[in-house]
Length: 553
Image 1 (cartoon, helix red, strand yellow):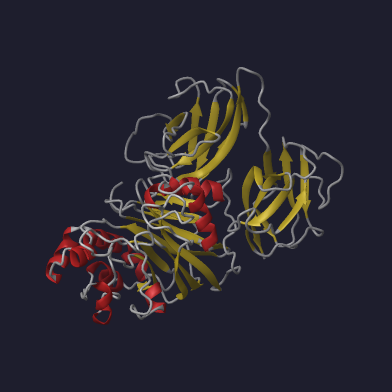
Image 2 (cartoon, one colour):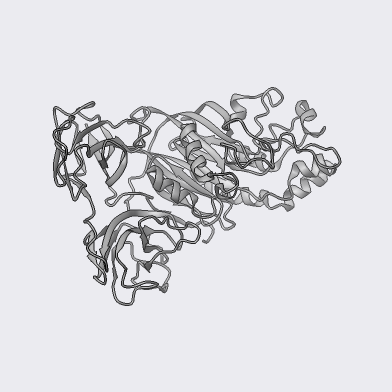
């Protein structure tokens, strides 16, 4: 994509994109401070270098307690998959970098022309709207400064020349150029920049710390430019002594590695989190791994899935303003089709890029995953050819005779996605549906709806469910959007019999659940934003939803 590309967007995992729970720790509003935990995480070649790397990556994110994760080496798809599995939100770049967030994403910035960085506006509260701005970067790896110094023994002038020739200075300059107006407004809307910078910090290679760095002290230009732009290194601000607290992130699996000439692998802090704005106060910053960690090459069994350590920084954030931007939507005209029936997808409030598209995928497939393709797709102009410099922000796409690459759809379960700009950032969806084909009718898809999208605190909420499996312990749960079912408890819930106790050996497949005065454990719901799900059998397998709604005072 072109440098400076900027679009309004919300990456969501729901059918109807009314805004969901925003401030979870604690509810924010009117400048109230919130605790925000930010993580930068290089996932090492799409989490493929250890056994069960995907599952270990997901577990590491949950164990860290992060609210927002800046990711590198995602392969253009990993953040989308993680967001779908977590029920979070994501901006997945076309290459390495991506953002993953518990909170809704309402606007995207970038990616930059070299795909070195991208950013997003993250909506941390919705009533009133309050945002933070988050950028992630992954700068070019080679030539690598510590190798030039510690392995090659080059003079400082040549090390700095190599640093310039690497492209990192140019990459960070472009990122900071795009961030400049956002940083200028950081006292109103806090700004964060994190990533794998592939360079040490000038705050670390000081004369006092030269013994840790082969005798060198170097004013590294990338981090100097970040500081000059008005951003503060969260780790070093809390751990100001680079000798006592080096904070190395490269590399936990090469700590004991030595080269044939006896020189050790240089250990450095190259993964960092920076912030700008008087309202973003770092209160904790740690180097995060899951131990024990076996050294390379015996890494397959490590629980930690990366060759980098992550960094997790906690901020007390005094929220200021935000932009109440329109949020994309996606719906289908039905949830059950016969093979060959037309499928009408209605989308709204998209960014209007000419390459935004609607993709139909098999239920178990993730957009962008290796060897996975949409079974059929259209650009939002209802064709597979781009026309002009923009596309419709709202409209309909009709899948019928002539749809490609596959039509008619064979019997089975599918999901529809509204996707951004020839990539795999989910603008809206997924919307699940089934197609009946040869071999008999497929069961109808479970559905869930609510009577409104905005409620006053204490107002009755009516949830209508249909086509459920009819288990006695199927249930409807209300969560804060930043909460993950199975990880955090629901705010309030009922079995489908409208009680919190089981009656009989089966439950209704269709019906309504009413949340009102006797709802528990929390009622009335405090002002804020929530999601509601139809869940199976005293567990956290989602049958339908999530749907998002707002409670106002």
